[in-house]
Length: 458
Image (cartoon, rainbow, N blue to C red; front, side):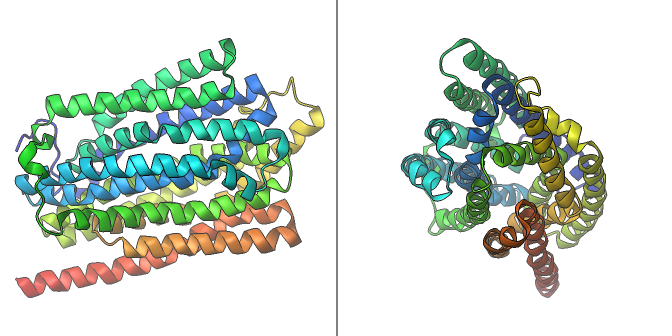
């Protein structure tokens, strides 16, 4: 096996390995958030608050579909990481082939399915008339580019499965820079306007995906497949499907709750939607590191499970959890004290009425301060969820997603009646807390079972 680019996480000090793996993932996420921020700033400042609301109200739909794509592409590579940890090259290559087949099939059908759902869902979530057409145009283009999103995610996840978190970051940077430039050009200098923002996103994802694919073919012989690798043993594809589809549905179940919440939010009008959109962008910026340790732990757990090093998994989990809480507290302080300044980045005070501008800032502040208190729940949720996925235990993350869904639906249909917009602000915080609890309990039960099983074999 070529060791030039791959990283074996079954040997070495766990904490150092997790940190070194996490840094490129964090930088990649920061660039992704930087792009998202620039995209929103460009739309908000060049096209106004209605265009900002149009992009914002499609966010949950975007999460629903592309979250499922991210979930399945990540889940399909869990077996890849386990085969790498077990030093099973034949099984590793067959897993790569399985990823190719399954991602091609799912991308095709998801593109058709998602495109047909756009109009019904926008009606279902009470999208205001003044932003309906622009919202539909924007999200339809995004969904038609699903295969570009899947290509990058698939290649990035395969590279991470063999311990390389740097290469996906490099190509994400290239895609992000291209995206920002194309975003500005298409919105400012062409009649495409909001459609230009969507086209820029799809084009940048395609570029990043093609670059990753080229690099795998050139530098990673361990990931290169031949015709014989597409001959799968009985049940091999089913193994990948069980984990991948579970992860996909887990993301989608969570997203359904967000869509329902968006429907409740839309009743408050375009100004509140714009404030919520800006606030959630700030939330994403301040919690970007929440997913990082989870991604690292998924690969770490998968490789070490393949190597049958259960105690090592638990050691990494404990250290990651402590670091997650520390980062959550620091992130919460940033959101609490600097939320107003960060929210203002997405608004154009020169074109907005002073009263409207002040209302958006005040509304966003309320959302951010409520959520900031619950950041530790969110950070731990990601860490435990991705670790369980890396162990191939997709059921409990699915249960966690269901808890998030039920809590968001319950909040959407109850609290706003009594608390107004404050009830909307409480939804995510409650969902994070209730979603975290079953994951923590399940992890400790599963890790004890694995420890006992390994002891019995010895």
